[in-house]
Length: 240
Image (cartoon, rainbow, N blue to C red; front, side):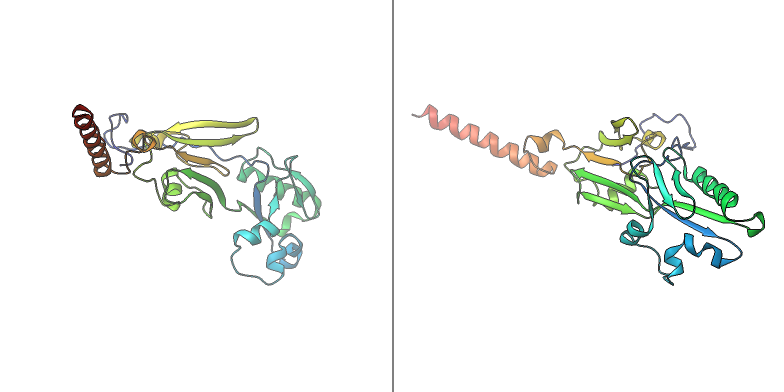
């Protein structure tokens, strides 16, 4: 069971405040940047996909080729403007930065410029005791860990919901965090909402590690078989 009230939330109304912070862009992230103005022809160079007449929403492969990838130096290569450093900036800060530079170098204030920046999908990895391990991409701004796990086939009966590991990328390296998904307090965890490049690892329960079975019935059956074997062996050796 997920998100049970274990008395760790001191609030009768169960109004839970989120503690997630705005995501800050990392190396290898792909950004989708759209530039709009009163004169659409002036923005064509910044929107190559739209300029080619493709009005179909971008898929993962198209975003890979047409989006703006953050290089090892934290820069994206943007038409006219050249290299723009975006490493460690939020999406809103990048929108402001691109708009400011466009107005300074290319557009006039009367152009009524509008810039939209989005992450080109939220990419994450799930492994361990889940229905389907692998790398997934969801085209949403925010995804919580339960949604991410549900997208991968959910945690198996043999998976440990009380100690799910979230391996998160930081500028200085990776860190391992723990979250108990059976506790309602998990919704207050800074790791409840996943971030791009997160790895979610679901460990097996002890009974799975011991090979006792995936369900309680299988476990009892296995234990009964072991007990029966021990008793049989005892009487056979006693009668020798």
